[in-house]
Image (cartoon, rainbow, N blue to C red; front, side, top):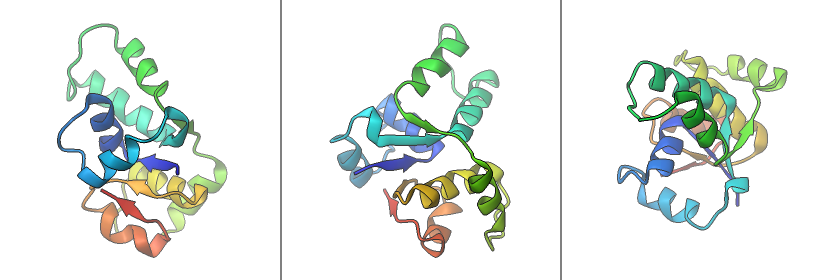
Length: 131
C-alpha cells in the first residue's frame, strides 16, 4: 500500500512525533520511503517553516530540507493536478491543501492527514483519509 502524506503528517512521521495518529503510524511503519508520497508543495511549506523558524533545527536548512525530501517519493504538481485542484467545489482556498488532496486523488491513494479542513471534504473528492 502507498500513501500520500499531508505536510504535518510527513513532518511528524520524520520526527517520530506522538501527535501522529495511531492508525497512520501503524500503516506507515510497515512501509519504505518508496511507498510514502508527498506533494512538492510540502517541500515549499517545510522550507517556509524552516525559514520562519516555525520549525527549529540546527545546521544548514537546505541540507535539512533535502534530507527530508529523500525520505519520500516527491510528486510534482502537474498541470492536471493544478487544474483539478482548482475545480473542487470547496470553500477552503488554501492552494497547498488543494494540491495535496488532488495529489492523493490523482494517484488514487489514501491521504494521511488530520487537517480539519481537508478531512471532512476528502471523501467527496474520492480520497480516503487515514489517521
